[in-house]
Image (tube, rainbow, N blue to C red; front, top):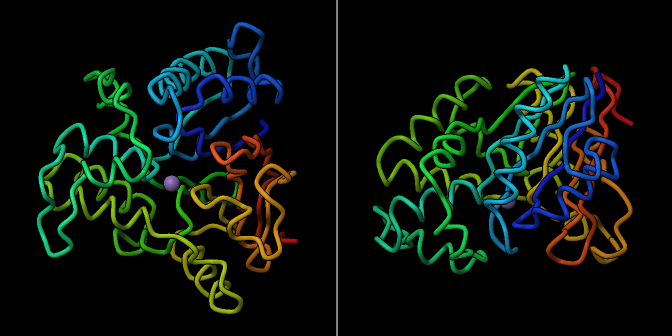
Length: 268
Ligand SMILES: [Mn+2]
């Protein structure tokens, strides 16, 4: 059962469907034809594009269709989902605590789309609030953000997922802290210490390699070409980390990446 990841569609529903068609997972009518394949969307459905809710609805439908065909589709929580839910719930109210921000302010700064906020239904909110921040599959740790702040939320995948679900169902301060933590980045890219950080997070959560979106490959790869010239995912941190966000909203490709099973020592 092949395992595919794609990340950061950022409001580009039609481009997401096109990329999945090109990967052989959807037909011309955007119906699942991936048979027993597994598709994992690594978060950031919203903002910086015209149709975040459309991207969510596409993946919600593919969840149902893929199961019917013997495959599966699911997603992990991105920081922009935390932001969309925070905006929906708390709007421009100032966040508790010292930093003085608000979801309203962060939402504007991060490309928030009023059309998405207007179209969010209770069904969307329930689905988004239940997205796990972390998943384990074939030896891979699937995560949105290239941060080790997940460790502040729990020391097992189940503990992190339960803590975030509780926070998104909890009070303003807890919700804000999830937003703050998942917005962090660049934890694995610093030469030397990045490898140590990656090893620590993989050991804690019981995976051989990690795959993330969130930080555009062209912004983290040394001497990288522009997003438009990005040709594929980037393995780094001694091969322990794989970045798959090509930077669609910045002119890059929406990469659909098939992952080979990761085992201890399999990193290139
Ligand atoms: Mn992100």
